[in-house]
Amino acid sequence: MTDPVRPHLPDMIRLSGYLDGELDGATQREMETHLAACPPCAARLAELRALTAAFDALPQDTLGFDLAGMIAGRLAAAPRPSPERPAPRWWGLLPASLGAAAALTLGTGIGSVLIGGGAAMPRMAAMSVFDTLPPGGLCFGSDSCYSKGARK
Amino acid sequence: MIRFTPEQSKAKRMTAEIDDGEDVQLAARAQMGDRPAFEQLVRRYQDRVFRFILRMVGMRDEAMDLAQETFLKAYRALPGWRPEARFSTWLFQIARNTALDALRRRRHIDFVSLTASPDEKAIEPCDTAPLPEERLADKQRIGLLERALRELPVEQREILLLRELEDMSYADIAATLNIEVGTVKSRIARARVAVLAHYRHHAGESCHD
Image (cartoon, each protein chain N blue to C red):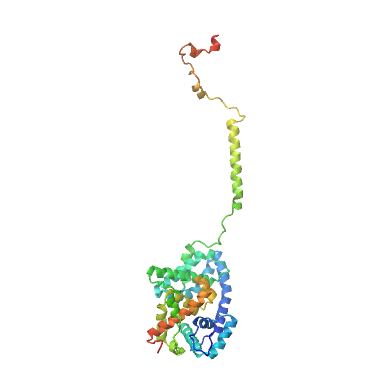
């Protein structure tokens, strides 16, 4: 604090902190010593104390009804609080991913066995439309009905 | 005449800390879905929250609605509360934000920068005799104080309310307002000087009376 012998402006931040008991121990003691010797600072402190006393004397307004009872219905309608769940980690999704991969592999395997594998596939009659001549069709010229080998 | 010393302030805060343990238990139960536990918290804090909001917004009906809104918001936000944070501080944070939102809606908020140089000037006290305690004690002067308080910028008003009416420590105020403890210290000092200046003005006194 400033030299008490020389006139000075009170340090309001320190005085206010002192009033609230928010200075560290050494500064608090330093302030006490200073205040004992500095009438202007002591006067300002008295003023701050008077202000605090005035705040204490302010009317203590109350709601005048039970707010908890009044909002009980709205609380019941509100979603029930539950502790926040942490965001899922990648390893948390591992079992599901493995299951999906296994199902996909199994499905692909079964599919390939059925389509291209050892199972005997019935020849479809409809495929005959790709023959050179339709069944029972007429030959357009001898080359169309007889292969070169057959004519020999 | 009310005397107020740092030692008394400390004692008040110690009482608050004892109550805090019960708050933690109730809040933890409410977090698990125990609605009666939350209702108990509402009963414990309804008047304090209401008073704080009332002095922030100045209108009783609006303060009642905002107090209700504060507790409903708190209930919904309860999963985010952690026992490391004091429940009262967390609740006043919600109350303060609710009040500020209402003031913004009304466009009554006064966005005066508190770091600008005029406030540095404002913190300089006048070097006259102090106001005697008895001069602030009577009803008429309480009315003047209420008026002076209403006229403060919202940043100064809220910090004075938290300190003087709620008896919060600087650390709790810092947590509630989301500012540094050093800022709390200087802002409270400026707010005190400012409210005294407004008071003098309305009482027809001047710095040099």
